[in-house]
View 1 (tube, rainbow, N blue to C red):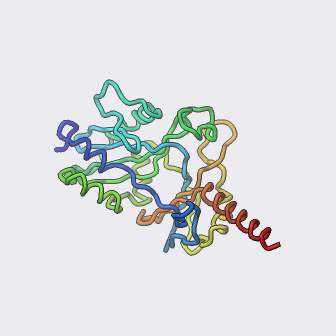
View 2: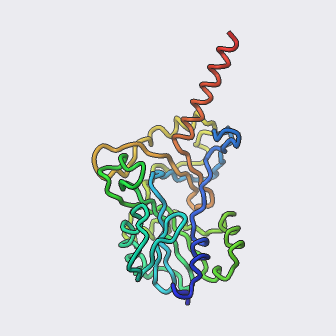
View 3: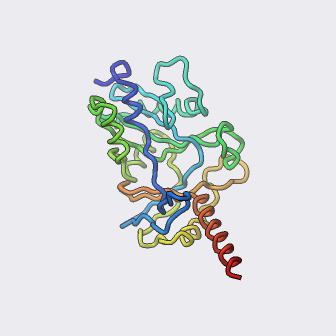
Length: 265
């Protein structure tokens, strides 16, 4: 059985990193703006709040041991006396890791990874949008990974991860895990058909406006929301729509149009 003592931690770190989520409208490689090239969803689309914090990972091994990591690094494991305090991730997630490791719902030969957004702590840039600076978390994805993949070489693991090889739980199972582990999901904002999403950049920005305020403030007046994550119920397609991407793109277009008008006078 895979344990902390037998695991290659370098491979485990690579195997469990969270992949980048593509933007809903494609990015222009020339200037970083958005192009009129949206992702096309078929069937139902679940819209969730994109909480503005830092990614944390809880990695559960078949041995009932656990590790906690940031997006890039492993920070601690069960039994560690000293941990990496980076961004307050370990202090925020340790109790969740202990609770999740005790839940008898995992496969005997799978590595299970809980991906959580840690937000609101004063070590994080956007903390003022959420309250008084007390770090907390929301679950946004769960992946199951066969333990025997740790026999692969690192290049193969990296390629697998970068090309979407992970099996993420669909919406219903994700909700079940959240309930079993006693954690909350990122806020579910809407459920609609893919054809109802605007295809143009300006239309999408207008569509996003009702979701501009965060739903997860812990105290005080809620601040701004970073954006919306769009996903199919089976998690086969996922994109992100960030307010700043749409606002910068439309502002750049407006400026360019104004310059053309001035030049033509």
